[in-house]
Length: 167
Image 1: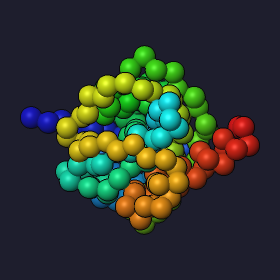
Image 2: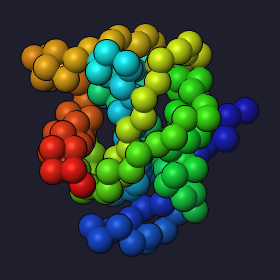
Image 3: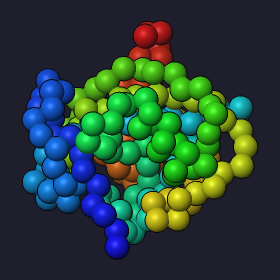
């Protein structure tokens, strides 16, 4: 039997209110934390995920980054490294932190922790979450933005701005 994941419900200042089941967080659109990891290859393309149709948020859409919801009591960096290995099979890769951002859309309110890494190699996709991976330039992602999860596009824009400022 599959045990439900628990997540920290947080306020708009990123302070924990309570641990709640993930299904409640989704159903009630409760604010939570998540990692957003931009994976870049040696040709400056991003690894773009096609989400499976069984995902509880934006099923079947494209995702400009890897990552996921932080579990209750979990620190962000271990969560990001866990998601990178679970979803893509990438391990022993150094992450660059780009800070946090408050992202809000109709379906989601999330404290996003942004990361990036460089990777060229084999992938082992988590079949329950990642249907396929496409390689796309940032310009190609922008041209197809309507096919992407709204939060990953918002995170991409923030990451681009922070890279340009060097912060």
